[in-house]
Image (cartoon, rainbow, N blue to C red):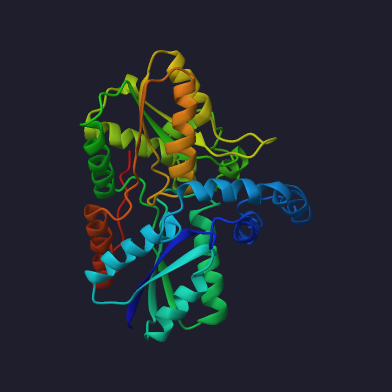
Length: 348
């Protein structure tokens, strides 16, 4: 069977204008794995409330980070795909979960090239129903309806893969070697606490109190919170970072609902007031810089930290199209191509 690869990232509006941001947000927020409430209530929340004001605000935010070539996330994803494809002898396509360049279009591109077996690569290191899972579900739905003879294999979440940790740690070290930090904050994208419980196959393990993440369980395979803290821990070990100078937090949340804590914006204030005035922030939930990293963390985060009393602040870029990251992804794909082997996770 001829093999091919479909890389999938989040997606982006076509332009930083309310006209283009609104349909993008509509598709994103109407996803039942993003806002996981009754469909009628979701429609009221998204179309009756959020989309009445958010497109204008989001468009202004996108305008701050938009590149001449287009959306940073799309441009970076295309660069990454091109570099990976250049090292392979099989077709590689790129799809987006939301917005233009859909997953279906990516599968169609591979189908047109005679591909019968696809390695689906969600470009998310961690498993969450609102990111990794929704990509997999959507891809399998499109495959089942439009390409029923196509076989799809999914790359697992790679949050603790030792080779991935080495690449991530190397990218962090390059920045920390040039910055006399007081503290390093790992800021992960937030999700509602109920998503953790919904993703728990045991239906009893996850307590979201810290203790459950340290107790081995099958639930860790789908527990976003555990996986985030595991990534931080593994990087600490890889770089031998001082534990009293490293912590994790969660950014981006909707109001009136408990999301994973501690909240990143609260941490900016806390750290500055505790005298940790030189802060480095890394956003490992993303492999490509985007609105949530370039605007929310690199711009807004810096402003919040400085206003709270900070003096120096850096945002460490995502892996983007770094050559070592390209090489690692290429190796994973080659292993699958030759032996159907997929990356192994670190277990602790």
